[in-house]
Image (cartoon, rainbow, N blue to C red; front, side, top):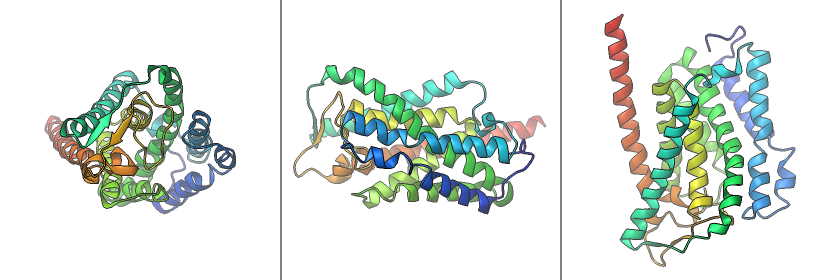
Length: 280
């Protein structure tokens, strides 16, 4: 934000974020609703509704604030950050699915490998959708709030906004709400420690994609019909473990991982700043 010649204050920044995310999808949304969300075309159109909001954030930063789009967190080391984010996301969803299968609370049907090419195409759509949400919350919002209100306030604001933007999803339970807040805190700390948005974008992309298109679980209560795997919670099994109709984000398993990851990031971040302070 220090690069901005015309910086935006925190209140206006919050308003701009809500307007862009709330209204920016409207031009494409009617077309997306014409197709079933669990179809290939429906999922592709649904994720494509985030293209305009992404471009609006870029335009606001570039032309209103007079700073480079890269200042949102898209600087060097992209490959390494993307790889770490992608691998970690797939590992976490795999652990969640694997534990449920081992415990007998869910089953995983034989993979439909013929769906893999289409599933990989849908990865592009999730990259657009997930990256736009990261630009809005862990990128733009944290940058406009931190200078005036401080880092803790920025974390709280981006977490609330992120959870609120997902509030329209059906099937929300207290665990689902906790996971929404948990992943927001986890990714916010990740950006704080790494100084980059690339890893958070990759994690969010592969987190959504691997849930729905790799393992075949619902993503935030939205069923994905184009999937390689077929994750099915067992009848009578604990929703706290399986996630139920909301998907893996309704399970306490990823919540535990988000909490552990957040604590680890706080420790790493404090150590790095202590070392940097001693060098000075």
